[in-house]
Length: 174
Image 1 (cartoon, helix red, strand yellow):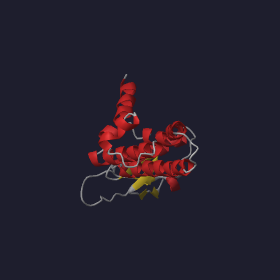
Image 2 (cartoon, helix red, strand yellow; image 1 turned 60 degrees about the horizontal axis):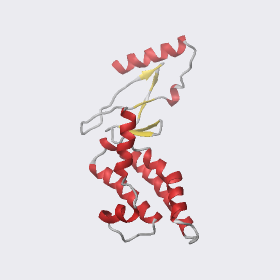
Image 3 (tube, helix red, strand yellow; image 1 turned 90 degrees about the vertical axis):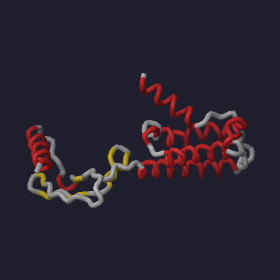
C-alpha cells in the first residue's frame, strides 16, 4: 500500500514537470532479512512493477539482502583482467619494475581504489580477498612470486593496501 502511494507521487511529479517515466523499465526491489522473500504488488500508472532480486545502479550491484559481494566480485574481476594484461607486458623482459609499477598504479589500482569507501564495512573475509589480490599484484610487479606475505612489503619497499585505504578515508573525513 505504501509503495503504491510513493509510486503514485513519483508519477504525479513526472506528469507535472513533464519528465516522462518509462514504466516498462521501472522495477521494485525489496531489502529484507527474512528467510523467504516477501511478495508485494506495487503498481505505477496502472502497470504492475516487476520485483527483482538484483539491481545495478551507479556502478553498485544491489542485492535484496544488501550484500556487497557482487560489487566486490565485479571489481576483483576487473583487477584480474588488468593483471592479466600486466603479466603479458611483463613477459617482455626489457620492462623495468618501475615501468610495471607505473602500469599497475595507472590501470589496475583504480579498480581497487573504487572499493576503498566500502572497505571498512566489508566482512573480514572480503577484505582479505582484496588484500590478497593486491599482494599478488605486488609480487607480479617485483618479480617476487615466492616472498611470504609477512616479508613482501619489506622486500619490495611497497606500502600495504591498508595504508592506501586509511589515507583515502582520512582525506574523505576531513
